[in-house]
Image (cartoon, one colour):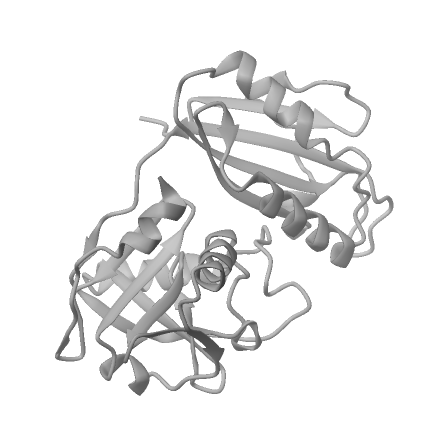
Length: 270
């Protein structure tokens, strides 16, 4: 069964989103990965953390040289309010360069798509965890964004599946902890919450931003930095986050972690 229930499209010249699951091929999303995406949650008549998602995609569009004039968050919300007033949905919002051309783009205008499916919350517990043996992450001008070229995460999750893991941890090219296969990673030791800095080539996750802002408001100490993987073995608790919520890791290389959910995180996602 196709997990995508509904597919909307919008070009720069369109005033509103239109329902159509047939997209013109070839396009620059398929040919060159020339675009970005955001994964978001629609709930209680709003898109969760919308401002953060919009800020990130606009920042990414600037890096890619894409025209942002057709990005309209208000119309996005009004469309969902009309079509899914009381439902909880997972949204993949993709923005990619319109037009043709080969490696050299011809225009900066964009096409947009919305893929809408039922929302599934993150698994509370992930038991089998390992470090990727095949994938290392490298810094690029776009490494903090969700680009349509997501091969490192595709291959990492293929490795995770082949090894029978529930979660796989990615390191950067220097060996520092970067992130998990589709999530940012955090750990706690001596009442301080640690997470890799963006210099470790991790995605600048919206949930990551919200967690760090919330910790700052609550005066809970945290540290962003470049950490070797051995830091995880000294942790008391490890969790990963993305738009679907928080998952707690049960153990890592023989170290058992506490998996009691943190109330401070519940405040963010509920």
